Length: 204
Image (cartoon, rainbow, N blue to C red; front, side, top):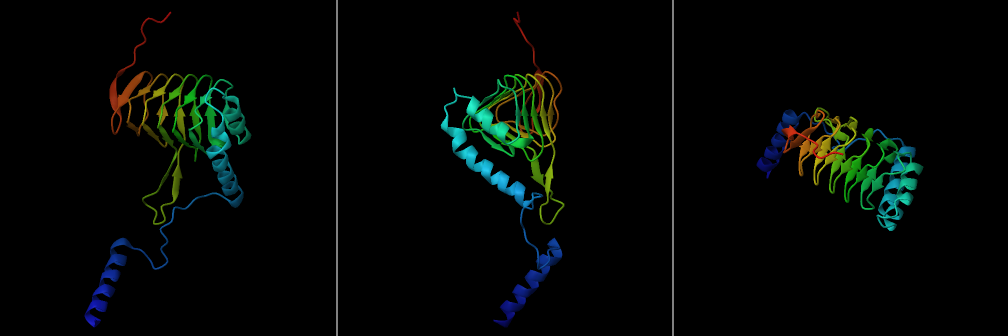
């Protein structure tokens, strides 16, 4: 019995030495939000999961109205699927004729700017937040995402914090984008790599 207790004590001491974790370590994901902002976040989440989804996709204006009510900057012509998930919409900006697909997750911990005529496909994740691996409490880190005019992000892709997609970029399905693209780039893969330049044909 004494030998077992001694062994457990030594193991615990060793773990603390290896990981430099104190007795008061609390492995929580810290956030910078004050109480008012947290209430606003939870209120929007409730709306996003209920009223936002009532109207069929053909009836666009109620969703635009609700997003604008919470501070989003949207063109009149945007098309937002009723099953899209948008967090902290006051950090979202979308241009003329741009669209968000079904089950897309737009995580606006930082600014997300989507230009004109952009197609954000089904199950696409735009993620502006992460957590620092250099912090024992995983402190939050954020960087904006900018998607310029004419971009297409295909089904199931992830665009991570800090990425800028230049005009007319195409992201292949199931890709993970961790760095900027150049104009007319077609990229794909995990991580996304350059495939070729996009070419327009038969334009009148």
